[in-house]
Length: 183
Figure 1 (cartoon, helix red, strand yellow):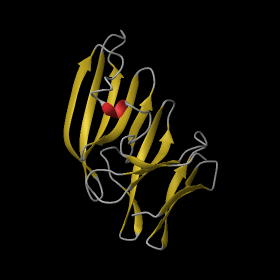
Figure 2 (cartoon, helix red, strand yellow):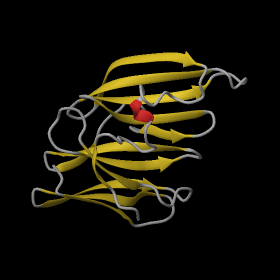
Figure 3 (spheres, rainbow, N blue to C red):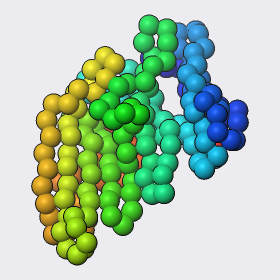
């Protein structure tokens, strides 16, 4: 489990190792290189430490890149003396969150599971919307899909009382135990 976590940016331009996640754990300093791009000078950014699933300890949540309206979070942990990124079903290992006019994405804890959800415009009329929810078990090194659900709605907004993951525009709002400081 991490004792201290920091994110250090070394370069402003595009670089495969333009930033480092630095973790102090068990008397050792561990690092993990992170890519930087000139189009997103504030990324990567440290979101904080989250209690995910039923596993002991806290996971490290980092926004690793941002698009025009959507940000993408990656989850890291310390195991066996190294910092590693959890595997997901996405090619880059991230979960999208936030969004804009045509879609919104969210990621949060749902009891012992993690839920990744999306709410999106269907078609061009502006009167039909769809959603998906993927529920994951937190494994030792990956998020394991447990179940999925999807559907349609006439509302342009997710029902936040039922889909609590949409309550705040940040990753893992209900299980974040320590928030990262703004750079």
